[in-house]
Every structure is written in C-alpha cells, then in structure tokens.
Length: 629
Image 1: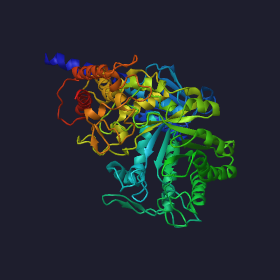
Image 2 (image 1 turned 60 degrees about the horizontal axis):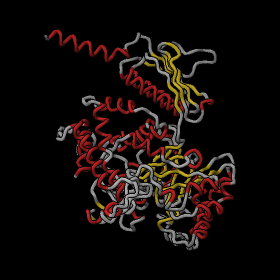
Image 3 (image 1 turned 90 degrees about the vertical axis):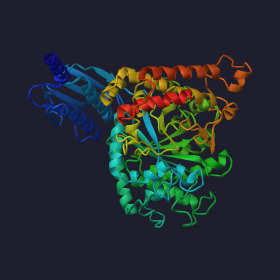
Image 4 (image 1 turned 135 degrees about the vertical axis):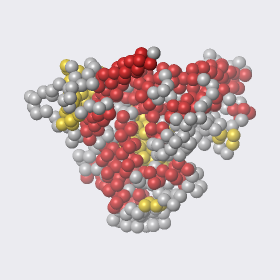
C-alpha cells in the first residue's frame, strides 16, 4: 500500500512538472529591451520559466533575415495589428512569436504568454489574438501631497481638519518610488493604461515658478511622525521618474484638481480661493503652463468646476475656467506644437454647451484634445448595472456629445467596498456593455474611490495581508475591470486559473461560483435606494451608514432607485405601481438566494487559521451574511 501511494505521488509530481521539462539548452527570449513595455513583458516570461527551473537567456532582436531558433520566444512589433492589439503564435514546436500593434500591445501579448506558461506550461501550442474594446482603462487615485496640500478627503470638500486614515497614511507612500514601481507593474498586468491623480491644488508640490518663488511647498509633512526632506527640485525629479516609469508600463498620466483651492499659495502675491482675488487668474494660468513645461511625460490635465468655485452662471464659470486653464494650455500648445495634450473638463457643475463654445480656440489646435468626464454612477458602480444618470443629471449627455463631436471619460466610483473583496465577472461585462454609444462618445473609464486612498493595506489582521498593496489584496476586483475593459469576452477560465494559482488548497470552480453569487447582494440592494443615497457620504453599505447615522429601515422606506434601475421603489411597490419592474421584495428573495447559494458552496462556518485561503473564504462569508442580515 505504501509503495502504491509513493508511486502515485511520484506520478503526480511528474505530471505537474512535465510541461516544463526541456533539454539542457537555454530558452532564448528575443525582444527589444530598450522599449520599457516590451522589456517588462519579456521579463515576466523569463521569471515564469525560471521559477520552473528552466534556463532562460534574454537577448536583443535577431538581425534582419535571422530567424529565432527553437525553444525561443520572439517579441516584436507589427503596426498593422492596431493600437494595443497583439497576436501569439506557435510557429513550430517550442518556438513562439508575440506581435504587438504597438509597445503596449507587445507587452500585453507577452504578459498573456507568461500567464499561459504559468498555467499550462512551455512547449504547448498557443494561438491567440486580441485587441482592446475600450482604449483607455484607468484608475482614479486621490493623491494627498502633504498635510499642507490635501486631496478631496482632506481639507477640501469637508472644510474640516485633514480627514481619513487611509489618506493620511498615503502621504508617505506616494513619495516612495518603490510603491509606484510595484503599483504600475501590477496594474499593467491587469491591462490598465491610465492613471488620474486627483487633488485640490497639485501645483505647489510639483513645480518651481520663478515669478512665484515662495509658493512651492518644501519637504513633505505627513502624520504619525512622518516627514521627508525634499526640495521642490528634488520633488520634480521624483515625479519625472515616476512618470517615466509609468510610461514604460504603458500608462498615460493625468492630474486633476477641484476648484478653487490654493494650498501653499494662499495669502501670497494676492492669491486666495476667491475667484475675484487680484492675483489668482494670472498665477493659476502660469501654473498650468509651467506644469506641462516641467513634465515631458504628462499626458493631460483635468478640472472640476464644482466644490468651491462660486463664480456665477454657466457662461461666467466657463469663462473663468477658460481664463485660467484654457489660456494656460493654449500658451503651452502654441509654444510646443509637437507635444500632444489632453484637456478634460468634468461635467460636474458645468455646461457642455458653454464649455465647448468657450474652449473652442484651445481644441482647434491640432495638438490639443478636449474631452469631458462624467460621474457615471455617482459614488456607487455596485448598484444598477445600466445606470442612466448620464441622461438625467446634466441633461442627455450622449446626445450633447454626439452633437458636439466630442467624447467623455466614464468615472466609475467605488465607494461601496473598502474592506471586502468583490468579484463577479458577469456583472462587469454587463456594466461595460451598458456604456452608451461607446464607439463614438466614450474615450474610456477611470475607476476609484473618494473615501479611501488605496496604497498599502491598513485594514487586515491576517498576517499575509499586512502591508500588502491594496491592488494586490483586491487583485480579483482590479483584474476584472481591467481585463474585461480590454476585452469583455475574456473567458471565466482565465480567472479560475488565477484562483487555482493563488489558492491551491481550494477548488477554483467552487470558489469562483461562490464569489460570484456572494458579490451580488450589495449591488442589488443599493439599486433599491441609490436614487436617494447617491454619494459616498450618504451610503456606505459595508457598515450600513450614511452621514453621521446608521441607516434604518424607516429611512430606507423613503428612498428611490437610481435612473436605469430594474427595480421599483418600496413606496411604488406598496402602492402596486411597479410598472413591470422587479419589486424590492422580489429583490430581497433574489439576494437571499444568491447568498445561500454561496454559503451552500463553501460552508457556513468560517475558519480562523489566518491563511489567505481562509481569509478569502471569510470574505465570501461576510458578503453572504451581509446580504441576508
């Protein structure tokens, strides 16, 4: 019996490693490693193969007319494939060719081949072609520069003292280059290619201005004793390095600000938050121009007219924004005709008609692209799967954009889950499919929170998660939106194989199904009430709280669903006016069914070992019990 068991174990080991057993000759990877994206993809392949005990040599591209040999991977460009597209071919046994329509496409193809080698081994035949359905897949990142220069959850919207533990803790992280290295590496693997960095007044932490020598914030001051000696010149070098690294991972970098805030400059040179203060417009216009002069890898700038403008009507507000941002970018664009710039104006507190007319001189420039950004689901994407705020909050935005021949970015706010790790690919596919007139008016999306700055984990007690990148702790959520944003037809098997690799003691099929069902409860309930509780501060489902209150059933009875909801309000259901929509009681039944399905799959009792597998099961339990509580 013992011998039979031993033979069985040996057989299993041989089966496991067989795909990676090759001759002693090294596997050659041919790639242009001078291109950052291609080098990154090639190194991921190298790391996978070496982790299985294979010898790998990373070489330059073969000379013209010279073919790559057997047991090789060739990564090259083929512009005919198109932007970000790629193909993977096995031209003969053990010889693979990855082609990219551009550097990003070559990187994505290489990353996909590394993924295939991880799950299925070197030596098998792989044939694959893919291209992006959404060209821009980005992250909204609220960045606190300093305790003296906060982001939204600092001194901004609340006008109170610097708020938010995660935001306070993030100050030290955003000035740590190793954080950005890990972050961009991880997010490139998930197919993101844009980052938007949001704050109230970024300029005093990013630029040196000869005409305003005393506005730059010197050094970095944080919380809990953190500080860092950095002159403004050193800060500039730091962010140039970050942007260069981002570019080498295929990312476009954008700064966004809310208006009007002047942290660091207030009280100097006639500058204040008052839109009529004598020195404000000239200073802000100079800031915008100087920002682009300082950062050659900066892709664009975005603005919010709301929060603290108090300027006047739509025409007056558009004119003020033009005098500052439009003129500032126009100054730079005229002086730098070979530099392409994107300017993004949020719909929030703005009129597209007034803005498009006022900003026409800027986007008539051949090197300037003018676009909008829309808060597509207000603060909660985990709600109605096809919300229609885009046709109600600022008029019919798709019709406006079509008439203006302009595009918008879709803002996907997740202020529902900071603790829990969400995952349902069918929800994401349906959500992305609901973007209106996607080919003509949608540039892409940016996803993120206002109430949480995701750098390193602050919330977990499990040892495996302490100090982990948040984008790694929530890997499945980020992977779903990034990979399905690139191609919504990515099969579920891709995600199951990731689960198999990460959680080897669990059944990937069971885990996938349980996670999918458990993740539906909160979105289905939020769909019932979000028409009333739109914002992050009005509804945080993980704690069932709103503004300074625990949300009660009596409060819920008075709510309405959001536009586009498939469920009617509680009030209409009670009056028998559901008009063909699902009632809240029917929704409650569905929520319970999904939660019980998840619990039936994984069991109803959590473990306390603290392992990643048990924490993941506990996450599904928490989702399920939150749904049926």
